[in-house]
Amino acid sequence: MNRNKNLPLSEINFYILLAVSEPAHGYLIMQKVEELSRGEVRVAAGTLYGAIENLLKARFIVPVDGDDNRRKVYSLTEEGRQIVQMDIERMKLMISQAENCLQERKG
Amino acid sequence: MFVFKLFPDYAKEEKWLNEMAKKGFSLEKVTLGYHFRAAEPEDACIRIDFRYFKDPAEYINYCTMFEDSGWKHIAGSQHTGVQYFKRMPEAQNDDIFSDFESRAQRYIRAFRIWVYFALFVLFFMVVLLSTGSVDFRALIDPRFFYLTPGLWEKTGPSFWKAFWFETPFAMFRAGLLYFYPVSILIYLFIAAKARFLYGRAKKEPAE
Image (tube, each protein chain N blue to C red):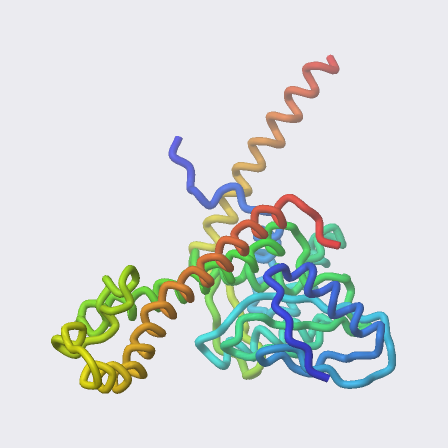
């Protein structure tokens, strides 16, 4: 199977994409990532900036007009939505296979 | 106070700046060296990123992202590359990077700049040599720095007159010829160092 080269998404990128499903600026993304991951993922400013740069290049997110001229606001694109969906399918398969295999061993 | 120092290794530079802060020297700006002002000695946490920006609005966006999360931008500018941040009490982490790879990436960005510099100088050297204003053979025989026709066949006072007249120009040409290769070598050396530090930073946790 010819898989998209952006898969699997890193944990940070996955949560950033979820965070910008509603337009958000940098610091808001940081807070949302922490909240969505229930405190498991804390992304620092320098790391987030680099991750945003890569997601912009991959066209998974785009800057959108905001009323704040000091902070850029980013939003999820259709391509971004698709890659998240593909990663979800990938993880669903992993989870079901893992559960099957571990169940068989038990029984 | 002004201190001139060069650091290819950002981890060492961060450590040094924190030691200076402990001695009561607070970093004010960095232009061709470090400018400090006297301050209360403190346990500072200064972190360094390497980025330059074509778009001023993007530079402001970048700095704001750091300041929002508790990192004050204390030195560096849109085009200088090296950016200095100081931890404020509200910052959650003690680093501006949360994984090794992104912390190491700053060396790759610096590496590219130094390679561009080297190529830029190389380009001018090629242009200069192709116009024929500097003769390459002068590297082996300095007489080729002198362009006066028949100079080396002259003798006595007419030789010395022509020789001294042209010497300042010959020295200028020699400067050009040596300046270009030497600066290319320096840039490539720093680039190689940055590339090495990238490989090391990828594996090692920062202090």
